[in-house]
Length: 124
Image (cartoon, rainbow, N blue to C red; front, side, top):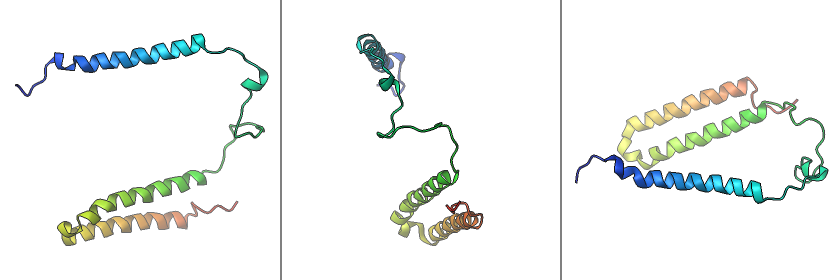
């Protein structure tokens, strides 16, 4: 047995790709051809949680909602990076402690900067 793969080793993958692609095409065509085609004003009207829609849906809203989401993701990622450090705490020694504290200090500097710019203050 050689470690190199030949083109005929990929034939099952290519067949599976074409079977999946064929299934998607046939399913989409069948649902379009066989599905109901009754259209009415009520059926074509926009629906959002049972509430009648008012005005334009393209109105801008405050960027602060996105900032809160980004802050959440930032601190969530911080926890993900700290977990391997906590698992390998003894093996990393003092250098690992210094690196993690540096990481946390940099995050806190960024958080303080956001607070000083009032990026997450929700009063309008």
